[in-house]
Image (cartoon, rainbow, N blue to C red):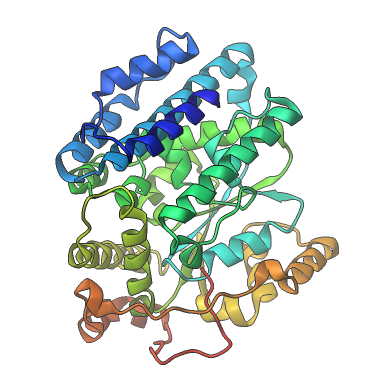
Length: 411
């Protein structure tokens, strides 16, 4: 952790002095990580090619600021060091890779559709588990002890505080805390096959390469990551959430043949400006300039593809389909539907915990911010026509853009 602390301080100091705007070569970063951990090589080198594609795209397309270069370097080295931590644990305890991950539940679908709300509601059940933010940043807590784990949580909290300072709008769009359950994009980012990088940096060639190459190796690592976390907190059912899972379902099913799938639907035109705004907010701290119109094109094209993929699952009995309005109006009924579909048992204790959470401040709904589609070069009428096959297939209620009162928004 001290290594990462030094790197992050270097990123802050770089704002005050001139520095190259190119990310170091892949070999240099690999050697740095190996040298810090006193290792000769990585046990699995399948991540090298996507790693090289990412760095090349960041250098040639992302227009990174000095801070962006430094921050990317910190992020990359953290991922590489975590890979080496896994290698060390597996050398000492090979049985970790034999741990079964039984019938994990993948919640995915249209972004800004209540998936975060549903995920966190289900995780009130003590028989379920999902990856927490601090675990995604520093997964190797098993050997750190209570003090070490507390220090890592504190360091993650400090990083969150800094990021809120440089991207103050993020908390309104997607509030996070050290202990909050988070998306799996940070897991697959460890092997550099994650749409998380496309959200943070302008890397179209990397994104195109991901589409062509698929995510099979990424989800093989995803399983390995869960096995390490499962060894720390066993005997729970894994509940996982990310809209990005939608673009990797074939590979997910190869790695997790018994996976359960929950798809959440919402009027896409209602949410696309918010998705575009989130992309802008994530990219702006790291780039010298951000093109909103380009972001609008990218986001709309991506979710037209996502809508097409969901239509392909409309008659697939292995997927449970839920509507945003259903989750908002009748959350416990939505949970019961998920439990029936996933062969889970909803105990009285678990349901009471969920109802208690629904009554607490932890579930306060945030005011919906009507970000303008036009700011991102998007037109509501054109989008409505393009998404009609999707909204008609699932009978999705069209939402209007008038100011909502008292309803708020669920991410």
